[in-house]
Length: 253
Length: 355
Image 1 (cartoon, chains in turn cyan, blue):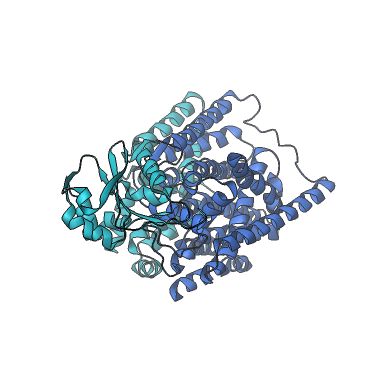
Image 2: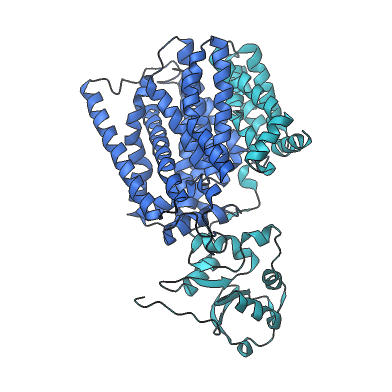
């Protein structure tokens, strides 16, 4: 039950849109006389809300999936349709300039109560038609080998994108390390000072043909001493080839 | 050429297949609404077929190529059936009734302004979907699954995050929406990442608003001004839906090509439209055509394709709406077709527990 309230709070965000939704449901409960609309815009949302806060229901849902996705029950509430429908009905009850004023007020209230989706700081201008950073595209194109997969270790900021762009580029660690899973290799890769003496054995153990470092990383040790050679360089990144890990191109490619 | 193929697969084919569903809503077969109805219905029928084809193949560990072949055959069969039904309908001269002249339509300048506002906001969102990239963690899974599926010719047998091989990931395989993305990529030749990040947002955002347009039309019959204002409000609510990361609005604009976003913004709103149609027909004491139930079943099965939890949520919605309607109108027989619609989702839930 407590978890349901926490989920509800997270889902509400600033809370005002949810308040408008509840106001709209009450408005329809009072004014909407057509039964089909009362059923879908009043009764069903009330049932969904009662279920949501019911511990038995929460337990049943928990067995179907993880608790982190319990908020999806709220998707059954037709928030957008109910608020919009109620607003149109309200405007319709007014005449002339008052109707226009109220219509503009509704639009303004929604804008003030919500938050623009595009204001999220995780948005950025797309660099290409793949919507992944140019550096990922360049490096993947450079290290891909016809007819086989290659293994490459990337710095943290590239992990999310590599396999979206190129499924033939494999990685020794994936998104799970960004979500807190411990990986010794990754821990070394994200350090500012990269100690090759500690990194190279792990890289070879994972069979990495390539290792990608940011140009601002400080490499401790001479790469050539470990059988590494600079394979490719692009804006911000260097790609090192570990010559001790064989990369045989299949015949016919 | 790639764009042309995608346009055929995402627009022309679903619109054609949607002819099969026209009998579900005989009042709304002409004009923009008719076209949107066909488009959405056709796509849901195709998704439902993909779910039927893909899940057994994934559980059997078959190759992606088999799914491509079978789904292409299914699409072709649906297309031909739709063509035949359209020809027969036209022969009976029952198609495309002229759109009614509406109270708020015609020379209504206010309605025209509202439509213009809605159109501008839609275009803005489509442009932003193309020119803005979002750092979305879950794409590292879903888009990678689509890319791997297309490239490796396997389904859910490769770890998407790293590329290592694994046993079949059956739980995710029960909702194989990324396989559809891979299918589009395979047939068009466009990289899965571009299909997911550029092509699908344009199509799916438009489709979602198309459904809200249909809902507006159902709510405000013959009043263009109210329909336009309704759609404008919906667009503003969606644009300002970033107040929480969990809202369907946020999912629509941020994670458009993920199955759960499609569930929240296409399947559920369309199900709302279908339930509204059913309840209004009951209210008017009209006969409910079997097509309407079949379309509802298709929507529910399409929801299972989108998300494993979709099965649970859709059953819950049908149970809540169905029991309320049956109780209000004392029409208990209504529950039978609704139960029929829930058969496959219940099977998916059981499979989820068993696997």
